[in-house]
Image 1 (cartoon, rainbow, N blue to C red):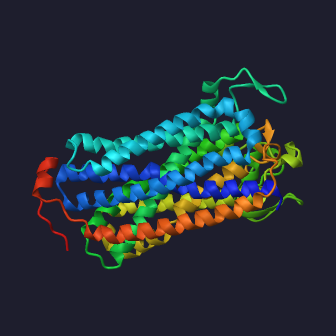
Image 2 (cartoon, helix red, strand yellow):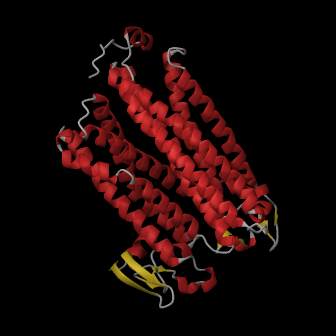
Image 3 (spheres, one colour):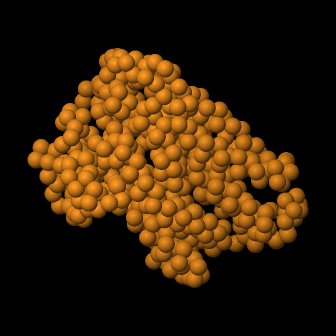
Length: 452
């Protein structure tokens, strides 16, 4: 690989690693808040223990995510000085606001973790809500910057530089809200299914701890709602891409030739040279309806763009298939889980719990695949239609060294995080139920310790 590919690979590795922690930072505070509210409302000691266990898990993820997020910020300047030269004055504001949201999140998380029995109960509870709000706000601001890269606005481009810069118009770009909604729903879905799988596994291994059954109920409710909402939102997201980035949509569906009644493809391996797709199941008119709500609508194909401006079709198409396939499956499992929970037969369906264990990481796989579609599908542009990636990369040679350094760094962080999470899961067994004084402090009915 040349320096451009090593720089892109380094950025892809960093983003792929960090996005997991960013997703957990968005979604886990909601689970903590729901568990905490359940404890305050019912006095259930298992809810208290679950809240404390999940809170500790959030602290671990936040610490590692802070490291990987900081690395990403520096990489923008170190690897892509051409991008920062033009984009900095235009889209720098969301990054600065994101920093403020991140610091607020850190402050509220610290207050929440150390506020047990040190703060008024309602104030303490609202700290968990504030952590979640700041986490989502931070994500919204970062995605605003990425949305601007896909739908640049807020400036006048004269061919070599930008003028008439309006940072607020750049922030409110056409891609921002649709991308943000898709990502936030995906984060809640992926994290909730991951948590659901972990607690299902611990329950199936013979644990009698009622904390796991409560965790499954809470996480299943969040996972199911998000999984059902995501395909519906995906329809509007596809329409937005069709309007703003028709070449990306064409690559997603391996749609080479412009025409009406464009098919939607299930599976398939595209060949850019022959412009054919092998082993796919085509649904006539499906892509036309997805993009324009009309089965007979004309959908722009890759033939309308110079070949040097095509995204890597094979990678984008396969990533899109993985994302959609997993999302559809998780939506079905979410519906089935809600049905079992409503009928109060969920915990008697051991086969279903084992399925939840097996699919636990797939939400994260779909999340990663979605970002591959977003980022690789924009190529060869770093700022769509304005600046190409090859023109923004650093001229400094030796990018291979940076790449392997980051492979080692993220490998170490991944091992350390897994080790700390394993310790956290084991330590959760030892969290004691609240004593009478704790329950009185919270204003709930005292429930005696009934740990196994």
